[in-house]
Image (cartoon, rainbow over all chains, first blue to last red; front, side, top):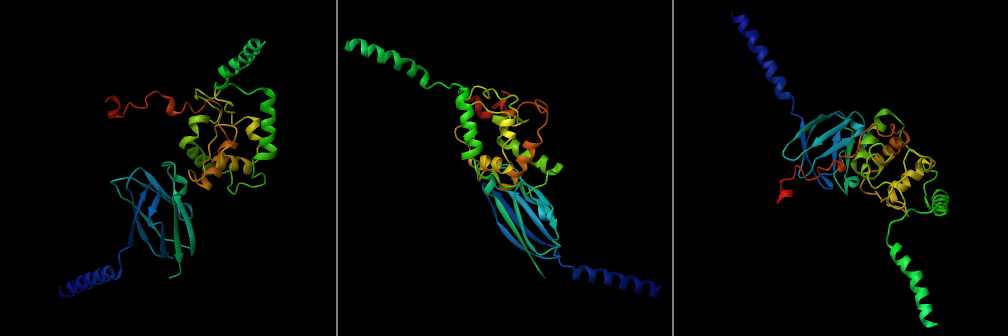
Length: 116
Length: 169
């Protein structure tokens, strides 16, 4: 009986230790508004998993970063969460992927990925 | 003598005044000479190459970009389907599937989308569309669907204000 209790306590301890050891994914909130993103550039570490929280302050937009396989919709009053784990170092260009008006083509975004 | 001269001048000027502001189609000579000038003199970018491959994804993305506002003048199919003024604007809007447009190089089409083209109603899209979208649109223009296969632009459905409650006020 004592032996079983011991095993259970040990297992619980291991689980809680592993949970404490994992820091939650970094979260970056990105707003779109005619005709820019805020922030317009972010820096991530290679291999780091980051959650991008995407939203719009006006009309529907999207954040399209083909090099990172991201195309997240951005609508007002709603947050779209996109997880990204970059596997290569470099600058990845993004843009608005949904036509939003006269300055749509100037809505640019950059993700800098650096070594850990 | 003086009176007859006045009448002659009036007889010449009156029809010109009547016709001067009307939109009339250009003559054959004007069309041919302007097209030659556009292809060989005024439109730049002749040697620029499309950096994007003609994949199904890129052509689809080009169609989506084309749907942003190009459809209002060129139709969904790029062949003026459903565009009510395509033949009456001066100069008339060419079918993008026709030889007049298809004989431009990719670089020239990009230049035209970027800068617009004179004399025509084609506006400049620099800053409105991204470079990538323009190149994707050119892939779509090179792979247009059969005329009429995509229906008419929504803009000409007649229900512009249907869902706008302020329209009735």
